[in-house]
Image 1: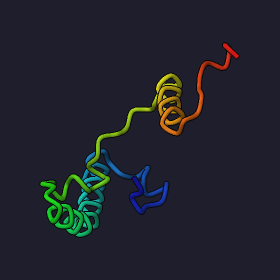
Image 2: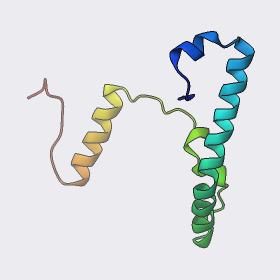
Image 3: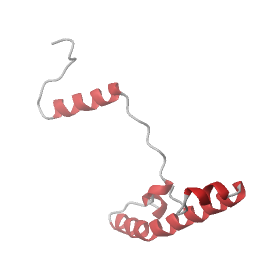
Length: 93
């Protein structure tokens, strides 16, 4: 998170000051994201999707889990099958 301070200013902060600054920055990001998120929620409501504006706010999203190479291989195999191609293990030739 970018706090808008120099490294010298950062090192002079007390832990309490740092937490307060980080909280202010989180609130600022929340305010910036809420307007566009509200529009997205209203647009989704037009097609019957009942989602909250917070569902469209990247800062509130759960971090994504990195896919394993096996999961990637499985997805690629499914895509190849759907497109009519052949797929298989590289080792099997």
